[in-house]
Length: 344
Image (cartoon, rainbow, N blue to C red; front, side):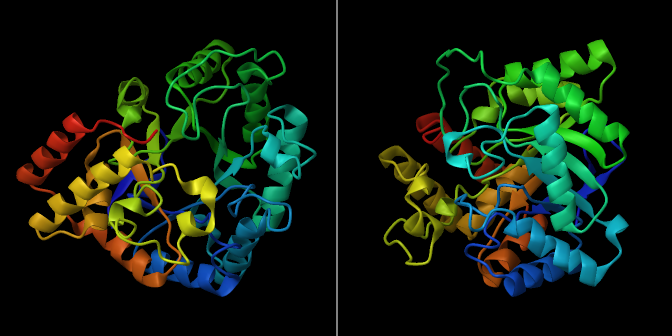
């Protein structure tokens, strides 16, 4: 396994981070523990969760993912050799089952952290992230920005001040953001410098061959400000494996849940077919080419992978040993120039 510093911290995180959002919905507790055991045995020390998980979010399963990690941590012990990240949910009509509708203010963040720590069976998290902004902006598949009134949104300053209090309490080591924009990243950094509050050390945004929008604006900021990208959906919900090109497996996420159709449009399918053909011409697994590409980006600190079956996880973890030659990278750029960011 390869490791890299997380942002400007002293934490060395594995280049592959184990994602967990299917645990409690598509994976039961035994399967979650099996994935955790395998990942740690392969040198992965970074585990990402969220209070909202599993997905799709609903009252009957909310928090189950963190609880599975907690039962595993309690059984395993040795908490300090792992880096555990989780996220506090932002507001949204689909989240009213959580605290009556979560907000990013002091009260909600304290309650969210309390509940996450209880489920995780630990007294601290290494990285606490804001899952999505309070203000209406372009995230979760919205590529273009349309300005809207955000008078009811918790200001970033209020959120960051609350996070600073959680860091001072010793229950949070570092903070990060997720599904953010260049303005959002800049605002968190500006306020931290102005008030002496903790700096964000990471940003967790989608990044894959079908959505490289992070490169427009955010990549330079991430590099210059030492805010590492934790790339999620590197496989575009599994689309880049090519398994959906000719059929839809009955148990696959985008088959089961219509809300995960972000990468299934006409242009997304065309781009996926081109990337799959490129990989096969060079004797590569399409999945490993897609993951290896993300790992080559200098602004990526860790690539978050998730799997519902062990064979998927094994293939994904082995990507750490895959190197893409110049011809493959040139082929990727040629497809990207022809079909740029088909899926936001």
